[in-house]
Amino acid sequence: MFSWMAWTWPTALFFIGIFSAIAVIVVIEIKFPGTSERKGALGLVTTRGDRLFLSLLGSAYIFLAWLGVMGTPLWLPLVISLCWGGFCFRKV
Image 1 (spheres, rainbow, N blue to C red):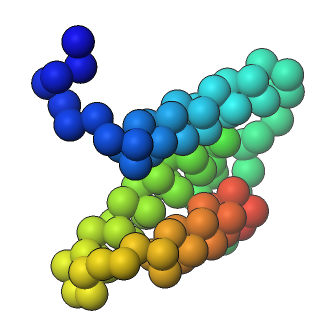
Image 2 (image 1 turned 60 degrees about the vertical axis):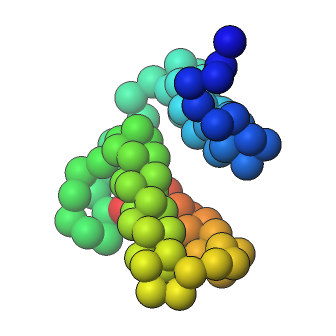
């Protein structure tokens, strides 16, 4: 059924994590509509969805840069990406 993609546990967990983050953002937005817009450290007016997008995009660049420069293992860029996500949701 899913033979078109090499589904491994890390791949499945990656997609489950992204879809879970989107689901959490949707639930929060339904519960507290329109209260997330703010101007942050970068001078942008962002919503929760914008901050999620910036954190995912930044994390992708962090991992790609790490792989290009250092290679594996990927534990340190994971920590850096989690810190970046925390920064995005608190300060951006």
